[in-house]
Length: 400
Ligand SMILES: [Fe+2]
Image (cartoon, rainbow, N blue to C red; front, side):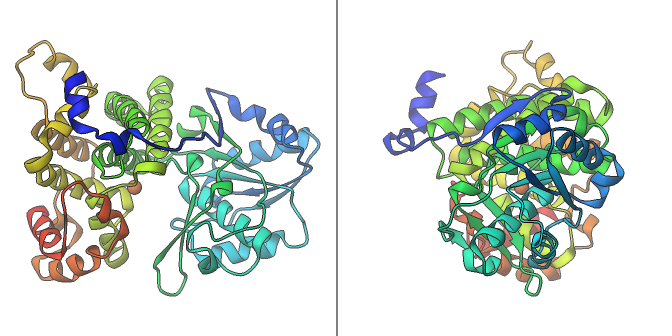
């Protein structure tokens, strides 16, 4: 294993600049610490950013009560929507304008956390989201943020980027500044038990795709690989369990930490071609991100493996799905890209997700437009094997 590892990381990948910016608190029931954690940051006035589903599940009310019980004034903004837009951010900024918060709490899925980060940009630095498109465009200090994820998917709680869609063009504006990182991430697996089965499936496959794409990306580093590998171990072990036993708290906990670690890997190693292929499906067909990326990923794994099979063999050493444990009793069983791609298709089926593009009403006639839209996607530039419009078109055709 050590020699294989040496073969796949060169000196530049062993170099890096690492700083953990977020205090991470994980465990069943840790939401109850929210009030004292807010006070530990010196906060008196908290803007609680969430979405209507989280309000209906009762989580926002509990978070609100913990903050108030610790003596904070709280303003609730429940206007975060899936794939939050610049308009959602503007509404949040308007609602907070007279309140003058000294803390923002993002409580919900990746959308609530991204919306909270977006609101933080405008409240503290003024202007509009597109002013901050790119890296390090905001110069003034930002409000402290506490991130409380209720899904196991994006890992946004550990990332410095806010992803906000332009309300008019629907282009995703990625704004990255180190001090947008949450000061504290509160990971309470009990919050993930109430999510609808479709959300468990879609966010779980997305988290898995993050672990897999970060492990092989051109930007991988020694530390990002540690995160990717452990994320893959936790997620592959527990994804089928949470689909079949939604109240299994140990499996929920493993998924939540797996998604979080995969998010930490993205922070330095970025993603790959499956995300480049997924974004146009979401933009043109409204396909949910997890469905789109999960459907395309097996094809990307097979394509990459023609040049990078040892990378997938290395990753599969951390594969921990239950059937893999049985297979490990047969040490000669091959375990590389083919086994990984086949397993991904099997979990898509188990999750009730489409495994072919025709199931999403995508036909061969759509492929050239999709490929043209996928080719300029930034995330594709980090794929280990080069992709262009022609290759991406071939991958869409294989997925039909
Ligand atoms: Fe993703």
